[in-house]
Length: 161
Image (cartoon, rainbow, N blue to C red):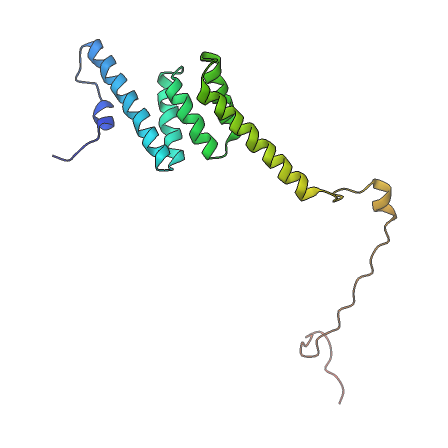
């Protein structure tokens, strides 16, 4: 018999008649997905962790663990706006959540560093001139490129000896 994961086994509850068993199984599957998301974060599989957390949040929108792990994955994937939104959702549920506050602070620090980097990159450069400067600029003459004597134009008659 081939080995199957707990998530594969938990995905099918067709043979269960008791609603309590179905709920317990669904809860176990959610816990497995959250655990797998944590493992994926540690292994730097951020896209996989993001997928697992989105699956959990589809069934449990208020899960603080799922929101936190999703925000961490998004932060690592440089999806700063999405991560900030998820950290703020955590703070809306629990204003004293230290990890969410640290996450928002980290995003703000990264955004500030990015702005500073862009300022240094474009400092002193005129990206766009004033309209009168562009129109008054003298057009540059086309540079004449000397013809290569080795290249023969088929439309031109051969040179006389």
